[in-house]
Length: 152
Image 1 (cartoon, rainbow, N blue to C red):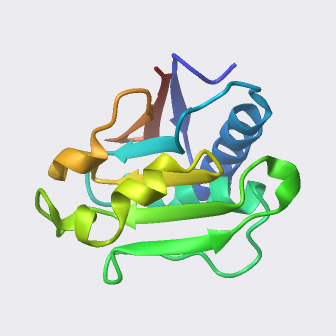
Image 2: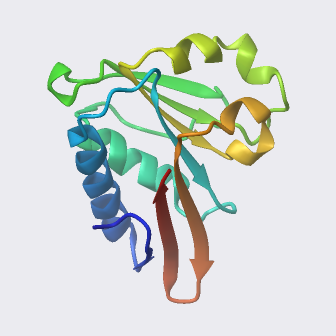
């Protein structure tokens, strides 16, 4: 089980594998949610947040190229119905401030239980700090990255 412990990751391939495993576990959970599956990605620049998101989204069947939403703020992807979700949203709140996500239809995105939402830099905006979110923290180490996944 990858939840609740710190994992040392040495390279991008390992990060993609951990993200894929996390996606498979979270998609298989048969819990009733009132809203979207929210995943927050916290950590300094270059710690692996976007690489994790890429692996996670690929595991959910996204075929197109997955890049950071830094300049577009939020990207939307269609998912395979078999995942139990229809859409995935990948947001980057680095350049945002409180209230900015609301303009992008954030509330409607979070209210839909058929959505998966990954947010980089959730600590920057109030709307991205949601109770019940899966929280993933990334940290630079000399020998790679440390990833800690908490399923609240």
